[in-house]
Length: 450
Ligand code: FCB
Image (cartoon, rainbow, N blue to C red):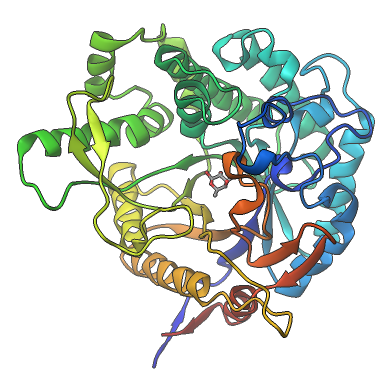
């Protein structure tokens, strides 16, 4: 046995998002979000679940902050519900909504827990979807106004800001596959959405700098280490894997860090779909320097060419690895590969893992405990890969486990549990799982025995 120790001041944390935990969907003047609308449409979410109550964090937040303290986290990543602040998406702010976040964030600060705040984790005001949502360029300006107001109110309390969570998911799961709100199924719309999300990111970064704050601001991307199907060795599969990387990773990384979209993807899309109008001015805004890149890592992607799969002409294959309850293959080395690649291709940028974790079918045992060894094992193995990457020079400064507690897992509803804290949705009782107790020790020792 030997102990691995992370760099001094490594930021250990846990993450959540507003719609997934808050509940109180129409309290204190909150407006409707696209997830409120979507989850109430029959069959869109497993078991007809909605975020109406969720973990009732809106009311139970003082208790939840105590739990965070108990876990000993250095930082907590949360998101703000835009329609709680601007019920109509724009115009007059709703003071009650802001009061909730102020109280929560003050409590975190008092407890020595650094708040990391995401401005957009998918709950767009429905009123803005009614005018076209992210496909409408006006929404970019409303987002900037929302961002400016939030910075003004909370900028002095919050040291870490994230403009967007996973713009790939918002664009392509929300607007192409339609499995997420707003449930649109049009690839060209999805591409347009991706460009506007990136543009709004750049505008928020500029606004933050202009307003003179001292904290850090970045963006969170869900990145996938992509490999060709290991069982075949043909050129088509290799090319499909590069395309998948372009679609998933470089389409977002390159504009933010290099000021351009990847030429191979522009070329590919031009032959298949409507490519958004992209000006040099937009690209300059999008590539406004950020302080860090947030990455969410869950699983690798193994790719085969598939000429019938429009428009990308590729498909995913499974390679026989163990899978989580989401069906995602477990591959901790993928995190290492991803981190090293980002370090190399994007100039040694500072990185934080803003989400990593796993869903498993937890049970509460006869002693009232949740012995989730599978999740503990998952985290253990991923932390080791993060450590390896740091040893190899990657500038990784923090790690947020998804999630602080079980919550509303989007299209999967409450059926999939990602928490290191168990939530009994009937009683709202929380139980720290075995993985949570283990994580607490990791944080305390800034490392662990391997
Ligand atoms: C990510 C989301 C997060 C959570 C995890 C499992 O895509 O950012 O809200 O649902 O997946």
